[in-house]
Amino acid sequence: MLDGLMNKKERVLTALAHKTPDTTPHNIELTSEAMKAFTEKYGISKSDFFEFAGNHIEKVGYNGGRLVKPDYFEDEFGVVWNRRGGDDIGVVEDYFFKEPVLGALTLPKIDPVDIKQRTESVLQNGRDTFKLAKLGMTLFERAWSLRNMEELLMDFYENEDFVHELLGKVTDYNLEIVNEALKYPVDGFYFGDDYGQQDGLIMGAPLWRKFIKPQLARTFAPIKAKGLPVFLHSCGNIFDILGDLVEIGLDCYQTVQPEVYDLKKLKQDFGGKLTFFGAISTQQLLPYATPAEVKEKIAETIAILGTNGGYICAPTHQVSPDTPPENIMAMIETLRA
Image (cartoon, rainbow, N blue to C red; front, side, top):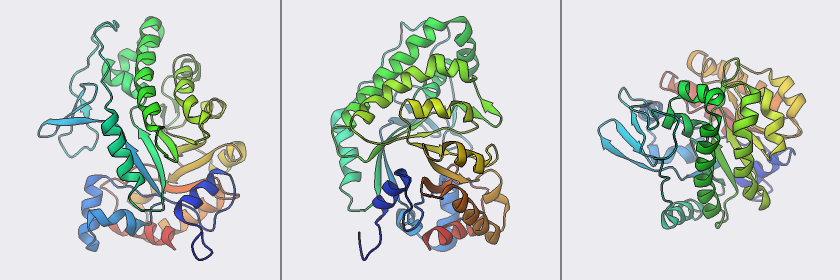
């Protein structure tokens, strides 16, 4: 502790332990367009934003890829994403599996040197932050990016062996990265894999349990064996599987969209088992509220989810470009206080 106060890593660890930190830890991330608008308005460089926002968490990302031509990004699996129109993620140009036959899939080769360099650059940056290893498009997202979501959902019923084999292969690849990253003193592991939509799971709980849960359990196992926390990002309403995620080792759930959850019920049902990360709406609050309303809603959300710890305050996603810079500043001022 410094001057009787917790540092940023200590606050996150305290929240994860379901104890009350000296102040609620927070993390604010912006899309590229929102970042441009904010930094230009307030005269802050992009490189200074992290410190200016007072962020508590840093992520070491292990997803790779390259720009193949302007606005077209090819990821490590060879999937090409069309990012025209300023979309930070993009849409898939073409799908690898036209038929449910796995034979042609060649998994990317991991690069231990690259993983070492990425990890050490964050671990050794001198900040007192909580440092997470991160793997995006973990399982379901990776599978549908190769197959097409509609086709994959039909495969859940019509081509079960293909789905099990595909998800197993993707998990084999993920575990290579996980086990390599765990050679370094990261503070935990963060996975991104969307399972939800506004009114429930994309594939329903029975199919999620049949296909996704066993592979996630494999993925989480070596992290839990080292006594480290597991974070999972999923958009949408995944209430029906939160108990399953706790069962296989999830410690922190992000994004917690207030449009789809009763936050008081969520805290009551899972507050002793999960730390919640997010809950400041990028869909309804931040784009449309006044700065005063933003501050009021943040205080209200912390009062609900932050009772007895167990909360990291954050926007539910990277803040979108339709959010006024004044509302981003209101959020920062409230959480830095």
